[in-house]
Amino acid sequence: MDRTTSAVPPVRKGPPGPDEPIARECVEGYLYSRDPLQVLLFRRPPARGSIWVPVSGKVDPEDPTLDAAIRRELLEETGLADPIDLRSLDWQVPFRADNGEVWRLHAYAVEVPTGFAPRLSPEHDAFEWVTPAEAATRLHYGDNREAVALLVGSVGRAARNA
Image (cartoon, rainbow, N blue to C red; front, top):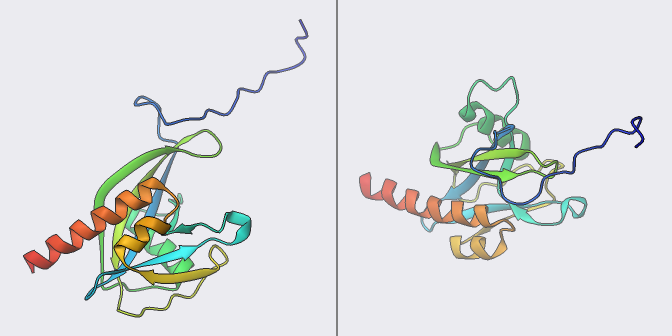
């Protein structure tokens, strides 16, 4: 047996187990406008798969809260500094990152003015306003589609409570 070679553990794959620790927190912002309800999607450039996604990013050590992290990501990825409304969808989903670690997403509803045109960052090469039904067909990840369904319910509840 060669003791000079150290074995590198394989990158874990598959869904995370219930007892696996969370290595990184992430945030996602689902931008929307009302009357009629529209969702703003962003397309990643070809080097990142040309997939449609919400605003998203990792919580940085200097972010004091998850709310601060999503506000920073909104500013970085869209130029949006002051949304009409920003609220947690009270939904978190653990997932396995490409490096095998377990990360956790925290989803936010972000209301913006109708027709808001974001300033795209290098993370995206296009944006489009779509209906929630169209968003469900375009979004690449299943958890993104679930979050849009939660967004629709959240906006409906907010309208009934207004």
